Image 1: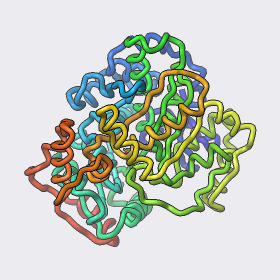
Image 2 (image 1 turned 45 degrees about the vertical axis):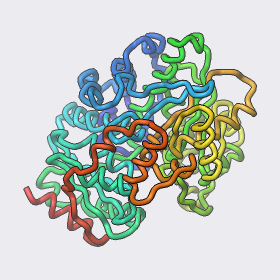
Image 3 (image 1 turned 30 degrees about the vertical axis):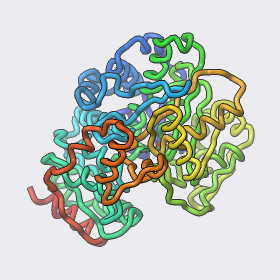
Amino acid sequence: MDYQSTRGPLFASDAEAILRGIAADGGLFVDPSLAQRPFDWRRCLTLSALEMQSMILSHLLPGIPDMDALVRRAYAGKFETEDLTPLVEVGGDSVLELFRGPTAAFKDVALSMLPQLVAAAKEQRGDTSETVVLTATSGDTGKAALEGFHDVPGTRIFVFYPHGGVSAVQRAQMVTQEGANVTVCAVRGNFDDCQTAVKRAFALLSGDERLRARRQELTSANSINIGRLAPQLVYYFLAYARLLERGRIRCGDPADYVVPTGNFGDILAGWMAKQLGLPVGKLVCASNANRVLTDFFDTGVYDRRRDFFKTDSPSMDILVSSNLERLLFYVSGGDTALVRRCMEELSREGFYRFPDALTDRLREEFCAYCCTDADGAEEIGRLWREEGYLCDPHTAVAVRAAREYKKDRVSHAPLVILSTASPYKFPAAVLAAIGGGAEGDEFAEIDALARLTGVPVPKGLSALRGRAERHRDVIGVEDVVPYIQNTLSEE
Ligand SMILES: *Cc1c(COP(=O)(O)O)cnc(C)c1O
């Protein structure tokens, strides 16, 4: 089975697609036969979480051998619960907790698996090079990538974060990272500077003779890689299986899912699960004040020419949602010329208009809502007061969308709200929303939140205090490329 580019007739095996990340024409790799190949979804629902993940990944990435072992290596003992992503009942709806992994954010589900897929893809292709992962992070992705890649044979990872630009907890998570193959470095600049420096490193070092001589290949861990998307379908199945077990739904009846959305990977995984047969009703796309997707589903026009807002839900502060491109491919029946035209217009003009007939088709499966930080804070406060459930500011955006969606909809399908971060990752905003406060740094806020609510602090966060700082380098933006070169040539 071949993957193909969303923008034209470029094909790759699943292993190649994982190793390349992005197609040579700038498109994203998709499986054009996703909805056609038979998948026994009913059997899948009877399996344990890890078996379920293995069955789904074997179907999506059939060229990767030994999936059971890879899945065990990725998850066993690393998540707080056997279930990976527990489903909890909150006020008549269900909240799917995606943050029970090592870094307390939902990116763990995929970034625990990606390194295993990369290692297996290399083995399958007889590729003995060293994979060098370069990551710029505004906080969460860096730590989740470090957790996934540390000590994975044949790989090494660099993470660059803005000096003074991440929270105290995020910094502590990264600079205490252990592992012989990891490098973490602060860059004097903001996140955009970091990202630009890393992009320049890719451009300058991809053809670098010294790297080639040492058989080092650069890659990125960001969410356009199919190896990061594929591991995300499983939790839609897990949620449905729990609803069945609890008698909340009859097998075959749809459940609706509300998804706090940034780069559109999380919600697209739900749509892909539906293509495998899972009875998914509506997918509700929840955005913060950066409402580019809400406007897109309303009007069919994707327009990034607008102000960028820094919000309390920073992982959703995105104006170009990369994974939407995959949905455009599928809903247009694989019209690569149309997708290419839209993406070219987006980069050239800053917007595109998707054909009306196709936008109508999207609206049959998706709807979209957005809210402000104040709306989100209100939801955190209300959920805590009325249900005793503490949620983070990203999840709060989805909780708000769920409330509005329920006013608008006609169906009574069970509603699953995806929760993407532990409230302890954003203690200041959560404390403020429930009427608390704290003097001091973020660790003091975590303590105050724990005292006030009694909700347990995730192990990975409480263990940070007092752990030795191993990565103290701070460099200028201009130094990123030589820093990588020097570090790579040290051995
Ligand atoms: C990345 C992230 C999101 C957005 O997920 P996408 O797949 O980018 O849409 C939402 N919440 C949190 C906490 C995240 O880290």
